[in-house]
Amino acid sequence: MKDPTTTLEQWQIDDAARLKALYNERKGKLSQGEFGSRYEIGSQGMVWQYLNARRPLNIKAAAAFARGLEVDVSEFSPKLAAEMKSLSSTITLPSLNSLEAQARRAQEELESDRLDWEADQSRERAQKSKGFPARPISVYNSLDELPLDTTVLITRVDVALSAGNGRESWHIEEKEPLPFQAGYIARLDASPKHLVAAKVRGDSMEPLLFDDDTVVLNTADTRVPANGKVFALVYAGELLIKWLSRLPDGSLKIVSENSKYEPLVVPPEKLEYVSIIGRVKYRSGMGAF
Image 1 (cartoon, rainbow, N blue to C red):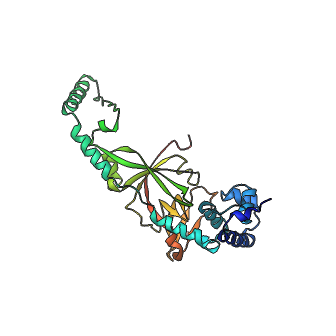
Image 2: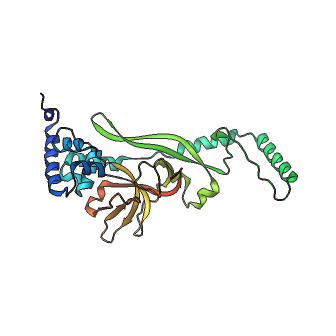
Image 3: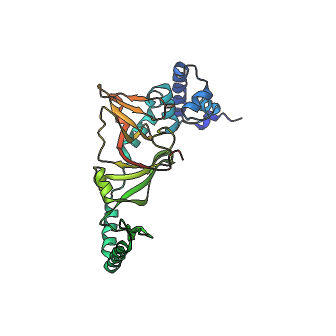
């Protein structure tokens, strides 16, 4: 039978040997199955394969092992650590220039006669109603029909880590924008051009944020306060939404709302592996329902 290690490059075999030594030193009382389940690596067999160079480490698995062993990825895989650093610094979100141009065109194309007709209908309904004037309900079939003088379109993106051409990279897909009332956006104390909406993945921020919720991020607000706020960030090749707070020594504390996930402290000398995308300013979704 062919030795599985022959399909790995030498640096991958060396990484596995260093990882196994660290694992045996720092695993504590957890079995391989318990370790794999707690840190989302996989089954006992998956953990064993990574440790014994039967399966090549990838960025996601390396980050999970590093988190569980409380070490830096560079301590067992300098190559993957360098890729993580590159990923953390290269994620960029699309600007709103195209949406602003689209909004201007749509506003120019709005028919003034239709707006006048809607205003007349509203006045007639208000005059016929008893007690408080009834507020009309408008139905729109597309974003182009929205009254743009009172509507703000927020860029919505789907961000994922994808593999290709022998390495991992960020895949950012721009979705149909989300409409918000201009008055509400004003209360967020943020410029619309700096706002972007994205999906929450996983249960680490429950019950504050649930899987598949939508959050709006202010990409201009990346300063982490000492008292802690919720931010989206990239750390060690992972896209996360977490509580962040700055410690007196300059370290960054990363905390999940869900108590089953342990807090993480990134020391000042490792902050180059962290890229803060923006602060969470709004959340919507089904929650626990």
